[in-house]
Image (cartoon, rainbow, N blue to C red):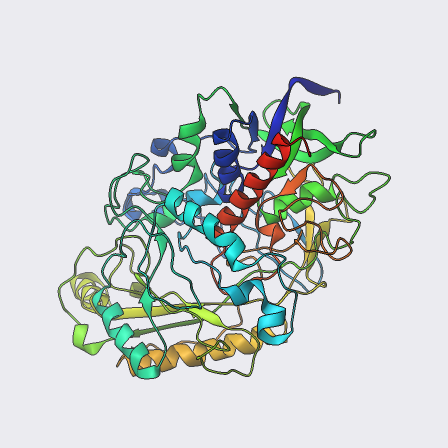
Length: 565
């Protein structure tokens, strides 16, 4: 197929419009650069993308569950979200024998910021220096907390993060626009249990508006955050960044652009642009720029680089180190334990769903200064929740029907509390993705990824300890633990915190990027998403992705101004 080439040469092409690409666009457009933003999916408006947000199950076909078997066993995909997520059984990727990986994708302007959990946590100094400051495992980042702190400030202000200042080194305080919503009754009781167990429990930090701003309204406590937000109360680049860029003379958004290759200028060895397939016409295009920025998400950005191989780079572009695709990491999920407080049974139910999910947070408390010592390396966090909720899942486990059953569900609601844990994954060269050797392609004919992933001894041992500590906190709080079965963590990717496949570093022989997310091998190529991460601490990663992208974008804008790119 003939490739059509664009006439303008942009200052920068950005691939992806989520937390990484969206922030990069925000920074570069406001610095006066002429930017082309490419996104594989459409640009929705809120009235379309979240049309099911407030629908009750009885208003949905098949009660929102889809046709029998349609979504069974799938994480996050349901009739409420089927128009958002890429269906993994239709748009398939590959996994190597004996391994598994859950790759969650949203093809739309805003990417996964359209439905993310909004938990916004800063990484601590020892998260950037795990090898030298903790236990000798893994590698240190080539940047420190001090390097990223100013960009955390800016990202939190842009995203409207709420929280409280607690003075804990394990989770540094931020630039908060409002305090956390008050804890629910069960969360108050849980905090007391944490005090008795010697485990700090603090208010959660999330990118949610608690008061009106120009980009959205204050949270109206509907509790439907997992399906989106029709009032733009929770941060997404679709709602909070793109509207302020559209109409600017130096910004162009092109949707339906499936980028699959970075093009090199054979004379200079620099990136000259990217090639993409128009998802409607299937026509191939090449667009050119002085700088190419990949911010499509760790896996997608890595796939583009792997598919950009040349005679001089047969294993993928910017891969002279041989590490591209390797050191794939994700937080693993464990310690899912529920309980209930007898003293809260049958108490009044309040509309306290605000900010979606829990209003408290249990930071890492193991293997840190002043914390507990553990038999495993690193540590974990919990994100508790309590109260009734719009769709009480526990109702499925209660016997009965009719009026008596409904009364039983309502009585249990205010008394319920649950813990959900996220643990740190150690980096391993043997955890990686590659272009599928069997020729699997996506719907546009682009070679697809194959994953080699699974949990190792440290993660599995930590997963068991996470159950133990969850039970300890619940008992200390006076809760009765609901019987459950301990299960192995779901596969990597399930937490949707995947990072690390194009990591930054000082040595070009062991890393893909330098400390400013600039490819060692191609000076005008940047990767600004989670692929650049060197470690995967227990914290949710989106805030750090936004801060890293902002720092890299500031740097490249200045380098371009000086004529160094």
